[in-house]
Length: 151
Image (cartoon, rainbow, N blue to C red; front, side, top):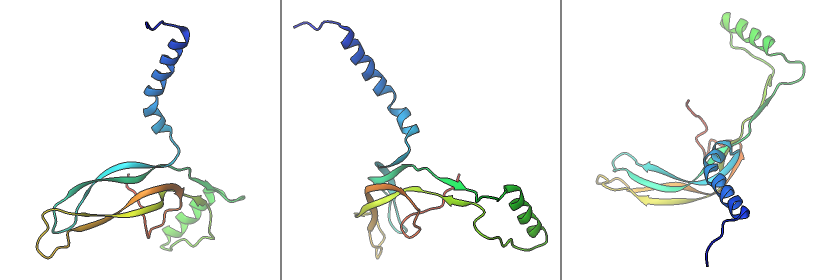
């Protein structure tokens, strides 16, 4: 049976081409949090490193700041500048700005343990790390997550 070219086949091929070419763009525009495969070097003092592939949380979450009614940025900056210039730490009634900083973080995880190679005598070769089962946009909890970042 020969395949006949038709307008509907052209449309199907066009849509397939668009879907394949836009997948990279979708990741750049993605807002939210998802489980994604991640590879890192597991290491600790006294042992060799081991490349480990696991599931981690990845994404971009909406964050925002709200300035209370009647507060101007200029007045806050002037108050802080004057206090700092006379050697005092600024004591201000919080919040001049209320922040809602959400990060992509683990909602549910399980612990995975691997054995590191070439450990020195007396060094425990086990290395334990979390593997993401579910992720969400939420507050960064320092007891489970490294919340600081460098640019």
